[in-house]
Length: 589
Image 1: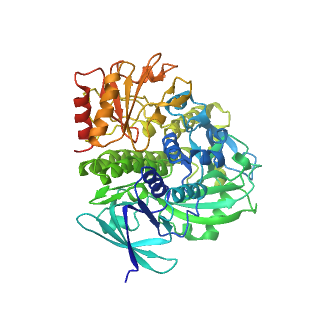
Image 2: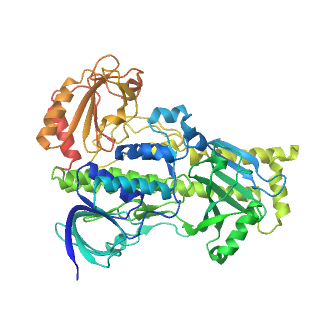
Image 3: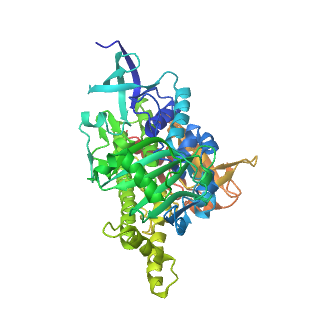
């Protein structure tokens, strides 16, 4: 017997990064939600920790970016990643092999600074999720419920009903919602509605140690976030990342240490054996390690066969699972819900048709599938590198593996070609740390985007992102000023729940059309004219002029998720009609 029945517009299942972000965004859009999580609290594992620029833009929308920056890794301490020979315990251990910039070099990379007003950040989920949860609770008091588990659900013609167990009290209740958003990692909801994750599974197993330790005598590069240690002692690569919480770099008080095993190696399940492997690999002997948690997870690349089943949607790990290489998992989850939430908000208000909700899968599934492929490629590159180095060869002894690694610094003429080959392979691993076009270079193709007939952007290396206002593209960033000389980014002009028309300096008629069409369709639309010396906003650096790709009489229409939805290069005879047709198409009316 159930104790009670409650109703809501959107039931969110799962209280990780995706679910909490969805809760915050929908609350800011004034959509009633209930979030339930089967877990008693937020994550007890560091897990995902890198937040790229686009993710931080969403965190700013939610009102938590400053909180994240305040306790996250200082930009200078995450500006590089590096590869080393071993870690400790012998003269050559800890020798630097290669170092390269990562995720915008802590704000030093001009190309990354030109794309967003936000810099990438780093904060482990054990500290990120409490920030998100506190904000979600403040925006929706009493509607964020941890230790509440969905055990069953059914879908009717106009609602979806979930049976929820409150594990604190033991009571059971029903939640009746217009829509359900599953952010539960695929554990419960997806299988109940026939959504399956497809792709390669269980390619290898990783064991992660979350520890407090003093590594400062060996980790001496203060600018390095991720440390990749080829460890000939046992023929494995060990990845080490500082976790703060008050000091970073080599001075960090906490760390995560990752070690990998073949999927069928049962040794991975023996805590004592794995700890011995870590100590042997790093050469730290009985150096004190305060082990907080040992976790195990498998490498794979999965994408859901569907992102929607009736009134149920999946996002985050329930829709796609990645290797951690490239840091695309958590960030993709945040981008999923940013894409979906404004669509749900307009639909439950009755101003958008059901077809708008179908565009979530049409837009996000190809992007998430690409991100999964990129994560797998990043991961596989290390296997190729290890094989070429010869340091993971189980058929030879540790000294032979060390001698093979030492070819990189021998100075011998016969080793120079090998050294250059390895350094070039490591430099190519910028595919993991500088994949800017992967993070920003998507192109949405759906009925929520009105094509303008312009050709797709030219093919180029995925490390290189070119901003554009072509429909389907993310809105480019440019610093603008109002006439009181107050500065804002073009991205700041787009609220989480409103469309925006950005017209050229001569686009008065587009702005008036936006007001009329928005009122007619019941949709919020802001409008601004932008020019270097004329308009509602000034473009003092001419950055907007270089990326807007419209004439002074043209305009672009931007969706609440900052995707360009429509573009007119020039003026038209009847902008009200043109904008009305475009918006009705976007809204599936």
